[in-house]
Every structure is written in structure tokens, then in C-alpha cells.
Image 1 (cartoon, rainbow, N blue to C red):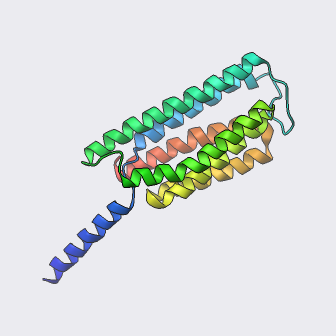
Image 2: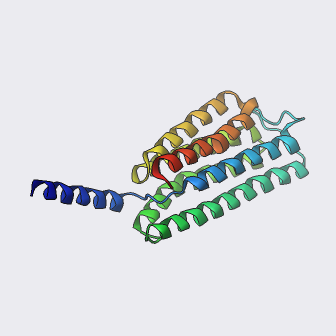
Image 3: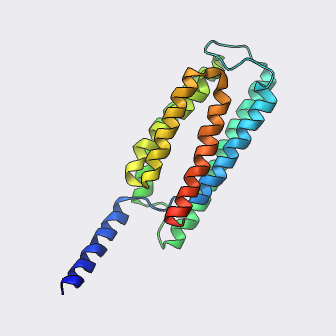
Length: 204
């Protein structure tokens, strides 16, 4: 009888845990997004930053063509990353017999939205004024804040990912000239490691 009570209690705890957290984030999406981040860093370096000194604290003059290239790289990476994340997460929620657009997914989106939108708008303002070197640290910092804020309702590894982005953002702020390296580390390598951990630990 006591064993039955313990099993029931464990089941209740499991249900409460699932109902309070969003547990359908896909490890594959993290890996794919990481490789996209690395590709974006390489393209930005090869097309814009290789033979320039745009990455500095002060405002710089950047040709219109290179501005357009950076915008296209950033926008393309963002759109494809979001699309793939939604695709893989939707597949994961279907496998779990759940709906993608539920209370927990709305909560995590709400917690991510404010830091990401704020960081995005601030980055656009800085970019338009020529402060290219400050955009990478700012994006890493606000992205890290968003992940840390949302981590309470998903996997603990998301909190670690958020702290990692914050640390890389601070380092990018200290070493602005090497900003593209910190971009590759944060949006590339860190995501790949996160995805591998989720795949290994949660089989997602």
C-alpha cells in the first residue's frame, strides 16, 4: 500500500512539473541554429570585417553595400533560425501529444519578448548611427537576459546558456575589436553545445 502511495505521489509530482514548465524545446534546433550562427559570423567576417576596422567603440562610416550585406545576413539568420526552431519544437510537441501554442509556450514567449525586442531596437539605433562595434555585445547581453528570464519555466540548461551569453556579451564589450569571435562563440558554439546537451540528457 505504501508503495502505491509513493507511485501516486511521484506521478502527481511529474504532472505538476510538466504543467509548470515548457519541456518541448528541441535539441536539434539548438544545433542547427548554432551552425547558422557560425555561418553568419563567417559571412560577416568574409564580406565586411576582414579588411576593415569597423569594430570599435566609436562611430564609423560604412559603405551602403556593406551595411546592406550585414542587414541581410542578420535578418536571414534570424528568420531562418526562428522558422527552424518553431518547426522542430512543433514536431516535438506533437510527439508528446501536446499543442505548440499553449499556456507555457505563451509564458516563455512573453518572457523572451521584452529583452529581445528591446535589444533589437537598441541595436538598430546603434547600427544606424555607425556604432557597429557595440551591436554584437548588445545582442549577446539582451539575448542572455531573455534566456535567463525564461529559464525558470523550461530546462535548467537554458539558464546556463543565458549566463554564457551574458558573459560573452561582457567580454565582447571589453574586447570590441574581436566582436565577431564572441558572436561565433555565443550564437554558434554555445547553441551547438546546448543542443547536444538537450539531445543527450532529455533525448529531444
